Length: 271
Image 1 (cartoon, rainbow, N blue to C red):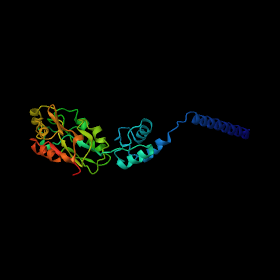
Image 2 (image 1 turned 30 degrees about the vertical axis):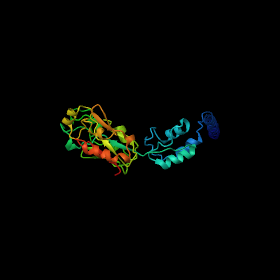
Image 3 (image 1 turned 90 degrees about the horizontal axis):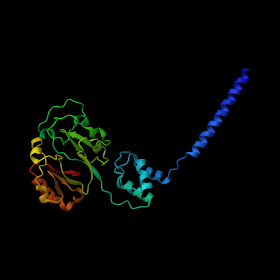
């Protein structure tokens, strides 16, 4: 009796296994997703950093966009020009010119140059501190608590004297730091030259109000824009038109830097 019971159980399990295998095999064929082999090819050419610098969630999404939606092949900041050329060959297109992009911190005021500051004893996080009023007089500038440091995978940004500072020998322009900055003072910009001028201020208040909270604030005096057309004053804040930056304008931008009464213009990048 025991032998018969065991035999029946074994046969039942065998038949059940066969049935499940058949169902799984059918489902695999029925619901199989056909992946364009070109997507795999492009994906293998990418560095696999999944940093999001290209504007997509990860490398696989970018690879699919390149193949299916004809997205430009030169958006991978980590892979750079060599990666763009490989992907271009796979796609049979021209890689086009690829300018290296880097992070720019639009604030140049160190802790001792900020006015109307108060001690902060809360969570050591820029996002947390940005919810608290009265930490520092300027409500636009760097909080200096290092959320950008935590976000950067390449050790390319540090906080010195309360100010986020980019290491341009390490920065690859992935944009991770920019995405976590609660005050939006970090942007990713293509560099036409090794170093470019930047107005290191984001304060949009009047010149008088800006000076009351920071020694290095832009006051919108237009001294820079009168010397070089690279600088454009919008409201009470000057900004640099990075697309116009090139070596031929170095002398005039240097003059504008020297003329700035608050010294908020500086050159950044690989000197």
